[in-house]
Amino acid sequence: MSVNITVIIIVVLVVFRMMRRAQRMFSWQRLKARRLWIVSAIMGTIGSLLFIGGASHVESLISNTLGIGLGVLLAYFGALYTRYEQQEGIWKYRSNEWIGGAVTALFFGRVAYRVYQMIDQGLLQDDARFAESMQSFGGSWTSGLTLIMFAYYLAYNLYLLRKNRMLVSSR
Image (cartoon, rainbow, N blue to C red; front, side):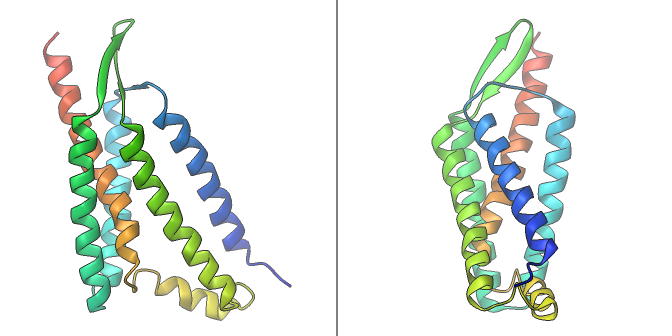
C-alpha cells in the first residue's frame, strides 16, 4: 500500500499547526503588528481561494457564505472577551480559550472528515484520483466549516491590529 507523500506532508503540517494553536490559546501573546498583518494576508488569500474554488457549486456557495458570516461573528465575540495586559512595557493579549478552541476544533474536524472520506474512497492510493479530489476540496457543503476558521482569524487579527494601534497611541 503506497501512501501519497502529499498526504504525509499535510498531516505533519496540520499536527504542527494544532500544537502551535493550542499553545497560543492558553498563553499571553505579544501584540506584534507585523505578525498580525502576515497572518491576516495568508488567511485572507487562502480563504478567498477556497471561496472562489467553491463558487461554482450552489451548496458550497451557500455553505461558504454562512461559514464566513459565522467566522466574523465568532471573531466579534472573541474580540469582546480578549484580555490585554502590559507586561514589562510590552502589550500582550490573551484570547478567549472557548471561542478560539471551538473554531480550531471545527477546522480540524473538517480536515479529519475529509481525510476519512479520502481513505474510505481509496483516494490515497491513486495519485490521479487524489489530485482530482484535491481540486474539488472547496466544492461541498462542508467547505463552509473550513471558511469559519479563515474568516475568524482574518477578522480577529484585524481587530487586534486596530486595538494595538489604540494601545500604542495612548502611551
